[in-house]
Length: 541
Image: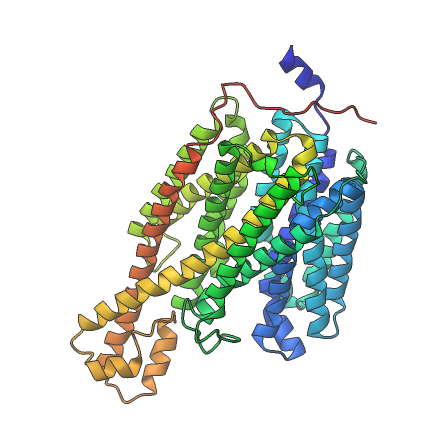
């Protein structure tokens, strides 16, 4: 009887088109920003660091406001606030299109980030409002597919438009997406806000500052210095880099937020985030698994472009082609994994998926060469993408289905904060790890080449590791008085050491994927043909 009722209550997919496009809207905007940096630098005659502030302010706005955004949606009503912030996102696209200075572009992305901070939890709440059971799982899977599809399409479309007519038309696409999302929002089921929901100002300040400090700290570990302040650091604390200081302060403020929230819930007051969404070890395991999934993806997305564009000296287009197997497989796997929910438990799927990721990364470490288009490398990226796509949908679905509809916004804010932090941590640790391995590799390689005497090694500064292409190194060395055989040996050291650093880095990533099997083993062990449904489907108005 239960299965028949679920069939009868199936909802149309038209509302999901708007939610899918909303995820595409955010992901396309984020992916379009790096493609547009060159045009912004050239048109406004500013430094690349100034132009890249568009990316920074967007990320910080999302990270700092996502939990406040969840409470705004609960108080005002998810559908109303969703339409308002989508309209704001459209205004941010217009600010980009008609920007007269780089300041307008930065402000536009600040508006987009603030809008996305509400859209992220709104997507979860509106999916919970409109879908149940297997349909809900499929809807959640579509969000993961949208992220993968948007990244690839933004690069190709943005690159083509940027080359042909400039960077501004890229944001006309963002504007068109926002308009489409707004129109499709009228097919979504309306909900009512709860005016009794109060926004915890103290909690908002604590968690906002914590997330921003953690994001800034991890994102700048490499450029500001892991411990000792580098010359590029904006300031130092008794010679210590501000990056680890920010990380420590962020952790302290984060702990203060949890202490404050528990006390507030103990008094019966409305918290900024209801910690009941993390009440069981299974739900906490889902958050840990989500963190590791996103961190691994961020690490690979940092490593591959670094190697292809900087070490090999190839174009961003080559990077997109190299990552195509991964992104396409993520797109497919995020949707297809839903079909396995009735046969296998989340725990089994997650363990197998993490094992696939570890196997793929280990395989890549042994087969990767200076040509990413080889069949063994493509096969490894396919397997890793399949594991990642399955995990992104699975752990998100575990969190959503384990909580009642009323807490869907809190689940969305936890998801947003977790993904932002995991992306920053994965990128930062991948960079620090690869540089550390590179230092060791270059030092050993220099010792193994007797034609590079100590004074030449010091002059070339090979042990002060920085990733550069062979062409860049050859150009720098030809300006010196070094003989040709010494130059050739230095280039060989450069090539082999960086390939070795890549391979060892991939092996360490594989180890992280294996460690992730521990939280995965604590995910729910549902019975076959059982998908939890914590709250009944409300009647349509």
